Amino acid sequence: MLPYYGDVDLMKLAARSVMGQQYEDWRLVVIDDGYPSPEPERWFASIDDPRVSYQKNEANLGANGNYRKALKLVQAPIVVIMGADDVMLPNYLQTVVNAFEAHPEAGVVQPGVQVIDENGRACQPLVDLVKKAYAPRGRERLVLQGEQMATSLVRADWAYFPSLAWRSEVITRIGFTEGLDVVQDLALLLDIAAENGAMVVEPELAFLYRRHSASDSSVRALDGRRFDEERAFFNSQADRFAALGWKSAARAARFHTTSRLNAATLIARSLAQGKKDSLPRLARHVFR
Image 1: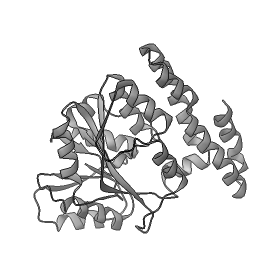
Image 2: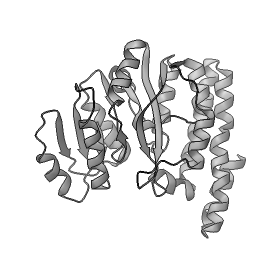
Image 3: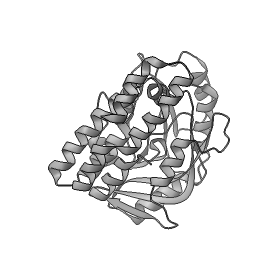
């Protein structure tokens, strides 16, 4: 599933990376959320491959709404909700299929990811250094389940949503929480953990994740909107985990340390850019 709105050339690159997979039993469904250009429709009409389909929403649904629409179109036993500017390496599908076959109990697989910038160059911004520091490490596959999975992800959301492969039965049953924009991917992972589901962390590099400084989450972070959503979300998860008797997960959610640190780093950035109106929001997230 490729929910799309944005740069046409990057979207084409993403689609080509799916069409270039070594594992050939795939279907690519592009859901254009009303991007104001005729080029995507023209380009997909020129592709002579029955595995590729394109449709355009009559009205813009927004990211969350388009993701929920994508889930209604799922047919295969494994699904990827891919970013329209990211890149699957040729081994991606084979890598995640192998992981699912080795671990039938898993609801989701996180393969190895390299972060790239707007120009396709490998990079490692501060947020990704933090992710790397908190992510499970090792040369072998690792399976996280239940409270262990929840605690690890709440401490720092080290997963890269567009690179995740999901067991379709799991993701379509749970679905995306309506109204969430910034933390919708983490919410879904924690829903899986809360029902004692499992996640495979696969070390093999198979995906390129594009980090944009002007992404929706970055803009929301700088003006503080991101953290309003995050704070409410983490507090609700702390209550949920406490009710399950998961003390470690509840404590990690209550403190949400890396989220607070992220807000703290943006205070200096906001001052440098003269955006003082965002300071109360950012400070509130750091200290509350």
